[in-house]
Image (cartoon, rainbow, N blue to C red; front, side, top):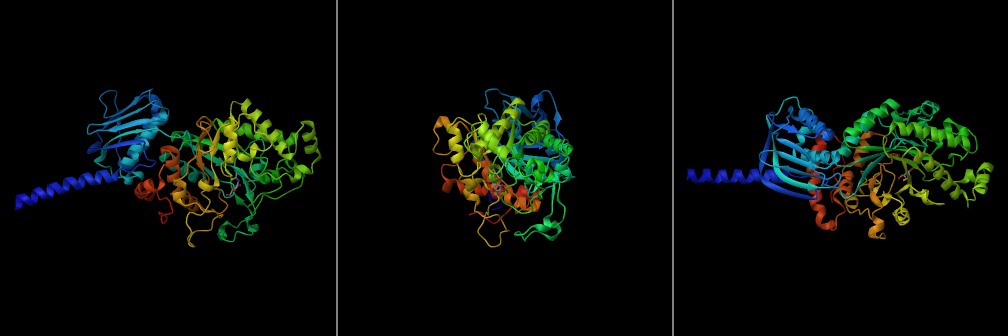
Length: 535
Ligand code: TNX
């Protein structure tokens, strides 16, 4: 009997160990191919690694992660290393293979991004506890034996954040970027200017940060929920050029490109408040303290064009990104109708109307940005009155903008309100914190297909990818931003990396199981995710 029960318990412990390993494997975004073995690799202080120099971003990340989380310092060796990174030019850009065997780990990719994403997958095979700094070193970490072959579906995988409606500190911006990198996102769209606050230091025009970075929030009318300590006569803040350099460098180490947005010609009241001559009326206006669409937009005069070129020049020097977002949305033209100079411009350039004038304005800016070797992105309103020839369109009012632009041969990025607006409610409970309106539950984000069905295969090659947007009118705190971001960003990362699901009903439960597991990581990272909406 004793022998029999020992036999049974050995058997049970074997199966349960296997089960634990298998259930632990949960990666978001879901890899294209994943085979799970039956064994484990044990990573210890004796583990060594080797990698081509050009994959430094990946190896630095891995070394820092293991050193902080496990107190294990990997030694670089030139031969017989346990963890080997190899360059394989046959693998597609950003793709990788990751093979964990009992003896060691092999990572193959053709570029540094692929190697970085292999490390992010490896990270999700490690216990969540490693996400924090652990002072007590671990003896060994068991990593399940797997074989992963993976590559992204879309090359643009983005998240946006509005820091104008509420300003968030530099450290939070870094955390936000770090969360994105864990999910194999590659772009952070930083909405730096709007009516309610200018957030980027421009040395040539100091009043932008002395004056336009602050508003009188005691004036907020229809938003009563704002915490008392936010009600200040001088509410706001900005990032110095040094802050921005620090953030850009930080993002590069996490394989994230930052696309800055400088809004024009609309959403410009903060700038016009600092320099009234940039507007058509010349009147002094306040930095806006309410939300909405305002008539005080830039006037297309010589002063404004020079001012915007100055601003873009300093911005382009700070951000290595090939794209600069120039806004273009929601610019009411009432002041342009009443401005003699604007009407002269319309005649002089043979334009149809004020929409034509906006198109002329954006084309002027595009020519300037292109002359510096960069490209523009604009919200879909830039289609009105004629699209700038090399512009990429970010389609937010549904997908029509993307369809029209792609059919004209321009690149597009999908951010429709229906599936990508994370400022909308994620649950229909009365308990939800006040939001702007709209309804975008997790499952709907998960069901998103960025390729509009109206496009042919050829036209669809202009779809670069998609992005989630976080407009912060109703998010005065960083906790609230995290609450709106998670878990919906998990679904968005899966849409843009793994590709849209063909069968939502069938695949959603599997995604939810992985969300549950991912959340353990967010707990260790102290992220304030919304955790009650998984149906
Ligand atoms: C529209 S989306 C805007 C933003 C608002 C947002 C609120 C876009 C290009 N413009 O200014 O914050 O709606 O959902």
